[in-house]
Length: 96
Image (cartoon, rainbow, N blue to C red; front, side, top):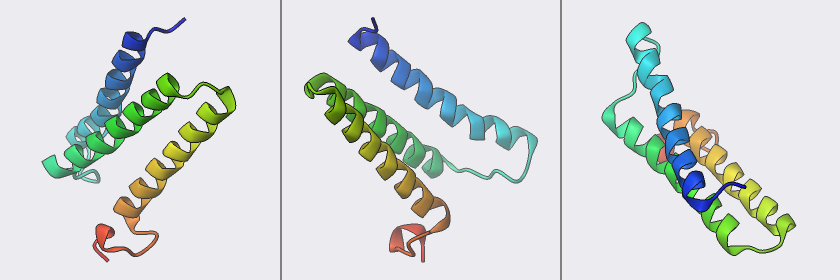
């Protein structure tokens, strides 16, 4: 069984791994151009999502509700990420 501390460590390692992908890609190509602010925003979104899912796993008892809430949190992450990346909704967040 996974303990709480192992899950938190896993969340931190997953965020670090995901942020290392664009960092490494920037070393090999000019197609990826992330600045410090991009890494801060991405790290905040990823860490916030992971911690919110952890909170749901700790507090919600029914398995179905846990799954549903975590799916909603992940969908919110993907929608926010897509809006920031390409502006699918045309909001001021994306610079539209």
